[in-house]
Image (cartoon, rainbow, N blue to C red):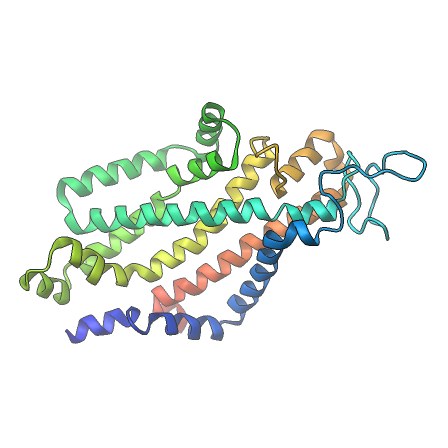
Length: 297
């Protein structure tokens, strides 16, 4: 029992441990602040954008304000259609972050449960689930997403579906490996001898120990989801009725302005880098919680 409580340093005190460790990690704290900024943009974008992001702007003489560099009137310049780049960058935060969060939740939900069940039950159940995982590893994401979206239709929901169907594979394998070591621990054997059901052992005694890994892959999953949405938006598979950073790059590329209109491509590019890097740094902090040896280094 003493070993069980030592391992579950994750149980009652785990949230406090997370807060304490992340508070001590200045890089992770800075990443949280950056993410807080982009979350505000995602939630309040329609209300704080200075102009309508899809509306073309015209000068007093009726001419289109096309590909204008940053100026006092348009702080980040305009697109080839005369749209305000600043407003588009603000409005474009919602779709990538929404896709990242929702798809990461389902990716981690599937991956964690597959890893728990495969590692705990073993034998033919483990064999079947791991072969399915191998098949998922063998399918390249972008071609798979292109085929799926071409069949199901363009839309944010279908992008999230494509991400969810493939990207659970890494978390499943890592969590399975962790469960293979945990299920031989004395506290699990004691629970079996006391008559606890497999379901109770799996989710009451083993699952809390893989929670740090789940949080780690949740953070990484959001970053993967954002990159996947941006990649699909860049190849023209984003939702045409909404604005995202990937679509901004797609329209800049399609118009040919990507070669010289740096003010059109730089803002969404910087936003993508900062958001993904922030989730990665937060994931590294959770990795330090999952493996204390990394903190010692």
